[in-house]
Length: 112
Image 1: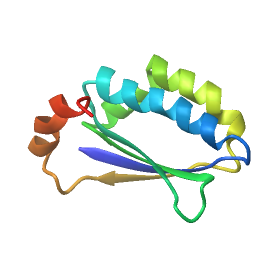
Image 2: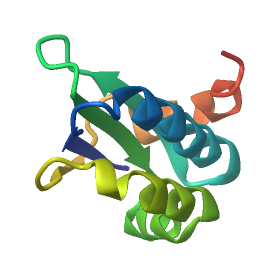
Image 3: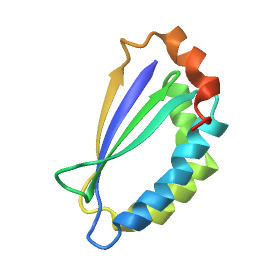
Image 4: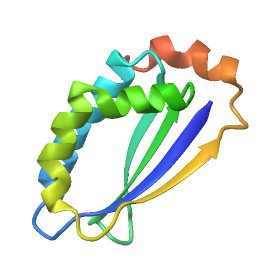
């Protein structure tokens, strides 16, 4: 499994719109992408215009499939004008939970 940690700064006045648009991408990712096992949207407590996305994918192919998914393309075209600066990305290899653990929890992702 691989994970990615993304940090995005949003311009003043667009935080609520960014959150609303991001819900669709997050839900579409875990619902429609078999290789997406987690997609968290986190708002920084010290800077409410800063967001962090934590995503877990089966492999690089699943991450590429995410970037080609309709919900991602819609999200990106909606929010990109609200970015305040560059997006930072950190690509990681997951250690815990195990790959089996990620796969086993996938059916429960949409029960929230």
